[in-house]
Image (tube, rainbow, N blue to C red):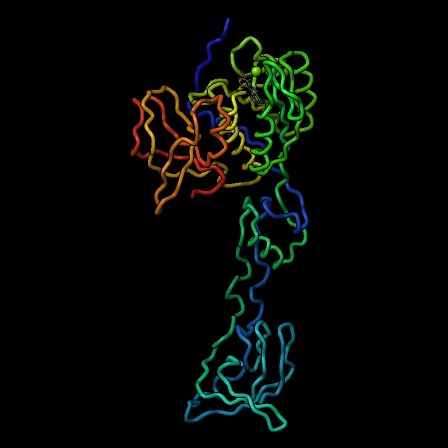
Length: 415
Ligand code: AMP
Ligand code: MG
């Protein structure tokens, strides 16, 4: 007899999964390998940037007080007593009506308090070099001040931030040759189903190629975790149980696709029981993916995603991705949401919340959203151009184009 399953609201299901706190771990990687990883510590400035007052332009460093009365009619001639490029330091004292030729980024000599740009002076020589200035130069002019960019002690990037090119620049600035990052959670993947062929196998009557495993591995990588592919399993209980039991030891999370429904060969419920895993839920009030089953065992999570490609995709994004991001120390592990205007009718009422694979576009600051293909859980082609999931809460008598709805934005762009 088929056991009745009680559907759980999506938010409650998400909460139940998130309550199983899987701890993230830290490791160090070379700065060269740090792009797209997630910081495992706050990055704090251990010195000011700039660390010293420096010239913002190529020009002449001078004492502004010498030029207090300087005008076009009353020009001032300064003797150039030294020249410094970026990285060099002037060792001389600069006295009245003296200047130092200085290049962008060079440290301002301590006797000087301003810089006049090269293009604002006339250079001359009588064996010794001189410049003629025809305007007042104010204290602080053309200088990048110590600490104006970053003040010592400030937390610049928070733990859990995904490292981008800008973060890499900061890491280099503060001497992080080795960067503390979250260890990528290891997620094992099995595709279950006796109908499955591997990507390199020729098609046979009644069989299909396993696409879910490859899709899920791509999603795992996009989420920031490491995918470990264990292959496909035929719908045979003992074999599947043994394979899953053995593989669990090697991963933080074990993810399977298929076999979680109530069909004759849907073996995952029995396997979870045999493993002694605690099933958190096995029915969610959502479409697609209502049979998504999640279980916990010895501090690990087992995700039983539906075999239907769209259901499998949605199940991962809603339940597995936030767990991965939490293990990567993210403060906002869930995908971002936005309000959008629906561009298609969804006339039929549905008791369950629907997650429509959608193409969402941003036009003049407004999101518009419509289905990216046929809306059936068995459909794979609707995923190609999907950049969002349109959320249509259940219990309403259909939806009409023009209504405002929520969209969950997948990684991608909106044009
Ligand atoms: P199941 O959840 O095992 O009942 O499978 C539901 C549907 O998804 C069936 O039509 C399966 O053939 C299909 N399916 C299951 N696993 C995969 C897979 N790895 N790749 C593509 N389709 C699959
Ligand atoms: Mg199956």
